[in-house]
Image 1 (cartoon, rainbow, N blue to C red):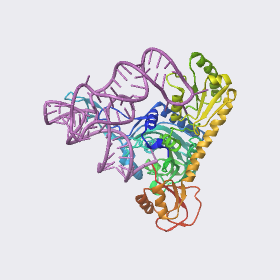
Image 2 (cartoon, chains in turn blue, brown):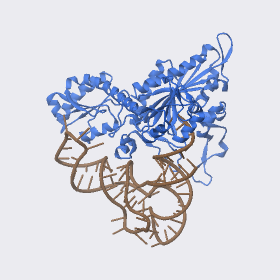
Image 3 (cartoon, rainbow, N blue to C red):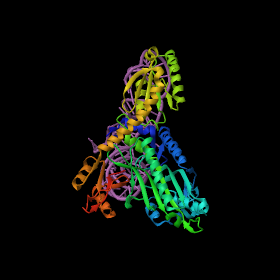
Length: 491
RNA sequence: CGGGGUGUAGCGCAGCCCGGUUAGCGCAUCUGGUUUGGGACCAGAGGGUCGCAGGUUCGAAUCCUGCCACCCCGACCA
């Protein structure tokens, strides 16, 4: 476990300040658990957005935007949905302020009370289905495959930087279909997109599976999730895709005429992935020197650091650096050339390691003389000297290699921390002493899951899609089970 | 919301228990100089209503009360 993740040491503080700062507003501010994402942290989010958005488009989706305010009445249309979200909603009750009559400050104008309170969206199913109702009459209007990039607010009892903030950024897909089969396919398709993104871009191995009834999204018939293991042995739900059946269509009375002229309710899915992914990157890949970003998501993939004593030296180095930058940029690689003279090279090395830049090139007078460049990789911290004219080829290959290596490291970690367990004592022992994923039999009842949770704090993260049929006995009750579920303590 | 902790310069902290000069230290910033192949050095300078509001006192960063925010542990959740 990287000390970097747990200690509020100097590194941690510096990292924390580079990526994010906590909301620090005026006195009496009640903006609890919100974050100000600084440019470097936001750049990582933009990379995530950009790559995911391409994948959504490639699977036929389009972007749209819906209001942040949801009338209270919308919210209560779907019984389980209200139940799930009611406890964590921010509510707007007034629309105007006025000067306090005693002349001190400003107060809410009681005359400006809203007839119906507005909920700041914790998720947008209701307001979107209220629109879909007007958009859908016939099977010819289907499917609707819409994604929205937005912020949402959930008034959590306890917040945690990146992993559970009161306000967070995310994307939420909301699709409408003519048949059950098509909606189920969509649900499956999107969990696959998420898994593909996690593994190929985030370098984060994930386990795809079904959520148990207890862990299902409020209002869904079925929830699929990708679950990742963090370096501290805790699980992180990294993305979810929900099969909503006809629940929201019924709640908002969205019917369509099918090919045979019969009226039916529309089938729905929704799926989302949030700024929590930045947290996942940090928790999964960091080491004692700071972040380790997978090249495919690093805002800066290559940094070039000149080592110089005077302007003439810098000019020569800049020539070489300029050529390298042009070549790399032409290959679609993002390069930063850092010529600041207020920090020493050593300081810059450490700084870019903290920021997780995958590849560092250093060029000094010695290199100019020998026609070489020093190349260092962030994941292994290895350095070597290579001929200047081979840099582009070398870097291109190295970026691929680093991406692969970060993934296999995480995969090996997960392998070493995933346990097949058949005895209760061992189950408890592993949770208490090392954490990790546990594959164990479960009798399939919510009651047993609840009891296990109460006794160990472990929950069923998912029932993996690829979990084979296998006769066994429930880890807790000893009742027969046909399949293993994935247990872990989680964020 | 319950238990524990914290809040002092941009960042990290000491001082508080036991009230008493002009509130300190490190990093960062600015100026000048020497430096630059793994977080440079010297000299000088700027930067604070000590989280907020009350109270006790001749005197409060320090003691008391209330509030706010943050961190850790629970319940809740992506």
